[in-house]
Every structure is written in structure tokens, then in C-alpha cells.
Image 1 (cartoon, rainbow, N blue to C red):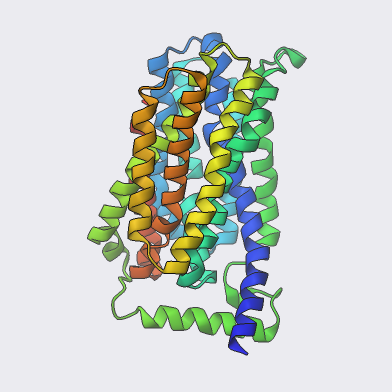
Image 2: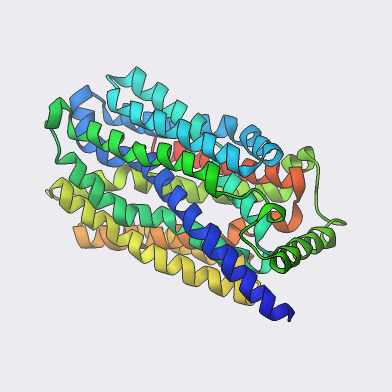
Length: 384
């Protein structure tokens, strides 16, 4: 009976939660990295040098870093539904305002504010998943959620390239249309979150009574079983050396990931291609990453091993970065980008399954946010 209800409940919560949070992250990631496509024409229009552009693209992560931990602690206290809705609505508004930057100063300010607005979203979702899914299934579920990032490149790159072709419509530049139209879904979905997302299993009216009882009991048993060894206080979550180790690993992956997101369109563009062609070619490495991420996470869950799954994936990404420095033709560049995408994307699900194995409660909220905030500073260092 236990196996039957477990299968039924996990299937039901997976279909209820995962596609929706994938959609949210898809929109978040497009709003975060569409600057790479906007730069193809925006930099010239408002006079941004490569140095100014790289610094401004990366300053997003300082806002993200400074407000990540407090944002996640607030989410833990007031619930995911209200706080994630707030995050999405505010980041959508700031992202749309990017359409009206006029120079370096406004560019810096809005990129910083975008980081402030989005702070807490990703670690909040990671924490939220730990409320609903047992640790044994968490890497695969995390992989499905995180697959939205490369998927946003697969689908968002051609869309962004096409939006740039709207240049001159109603007096707006193509890059202005890109920012305005790609920000709208974030605001709309923020209001949808208020009605759709359920904070905790105890409140899941869409589960039958026996299903809800099984899930609550299962998650309570898991929490109790690690109570003797897990850190619970906010300060223990911040000071745990394992949190620092995971932060440094995530720093390296973020440096590689956001360097690609910010500069890859310009790297591909140098071969004399149109914006639309750049969009389609930029989608190819991300397509490979989606498949690799899901398969690697399933293998991690099946074996119950996390550490070496992270290590091997990072080595693949490092090999891709080394090869990128030698690549001369467009095919070689795409192969290098594919290796980097595959490695970085595959490392993340097993990595993000590790913190909740030794942290719980407020410590998990603080620790996960710390890993993400310190790690994402790599997004400042890399592009700059």
C-alpha cells in the first residue's frame, strides 16, 4: 500500500508543482540573460563600451548577493506563495524599465535593481521543493526545474533574435521591444502564483485526505530523522563549512554560465550572422544541456551519489572552457559552448540536493540562500 500511495502522491505533486515552477524559472532566466541579445544593438544605440557593458551586466549579481539571504528567510517565515509572487511582479517591472536606459548610469542602476528584485527566487524554489519531495527524489525534481534555464536559451534565443527585428515599430528600437515584451509574462505570472501555489503539504486541498496525510507524515519523518545531525539555526546555516564549500563550487559554475549568457550571442555574431541566425545557433548547446542534465540527475538519484556527479560535470565544463579559447570556426565554438553548457547544467541538480541533507528549517533557508548568493557573484566576475 505504501508503495502504491507513494507513487500516486509523487506523481500528483510532480505534475502540479514542477511544470509551473519550470515556467516561472523559464521567464526568470530570460529576463536575466536577455541582455546578451539586447547588446547586439543596444550598446551602439546608447554608447556602451564593452567594459561598461560587461560591468553593468555583472552588477546584477551584487544586488542579488546583498538581498538573497534576507529574502529567503522572509519566504520561510511568510510562505512561498506571497513572496514568490512579490519577487516576480517587481522583477518584471524593473526588467521592462530596462527598455528606457539612456546610458551607463541608468544601465548600472537598473541592472542592480533587477538583482535586488529577483533575489530569493531561485533558493526559495529550492527550499520550497524540500517541503514537498523526499531527499531520495530531489535531484531528479531539481533537474526538471533547472532544465528551464537551458530551455529558456533554446526557445528564448530565437524569440529574442526575432524581437530585435521589430526595430522601428511604433518608434521603439528592437532591443526596447525585447525588454518590454519579455518582462510582461513575469508580472502576469506573479498574480497567477497567488492563486495557484500552495505553501505546504498540509494546505494541499488538491490532494486526497489519505494522500495529504501520507505526504505530511513522510516529510515529518525525514525531518525528524536528520534532527540530531542537521543544523537548524540561521547562524549555523550561515557558518557551516559545507555551505562555504558548496558556495565556492557554485561560484565557479555561475562564472561560466553567465559568461556564456552575456557574451555567447556576440561570440557567435562575429562570424557575420544575422540576429535571427545567432538566436537559433545559440539554442543548440542549451538543447544538449537539457538532455544531459535530466539524465545525469536521474543517475544521481538512482545511485544515491552526489559528490562525484558534481565533480565529473564540472570537469566537463572546464574542458569546454579550455577548448573555447582555442576554437576558431563557428562549429568549434558551438562544440565548446555545448561542453560548457552540459557540464555546468549537469552539476547543479546533484549540488542543490546536498544542502537539505544537513540543513533544515531556518538554517536551510539561510544556507541555501548563502550558497546561491555567494555562488552567483561568479555571474559578476565572469562577464566583467
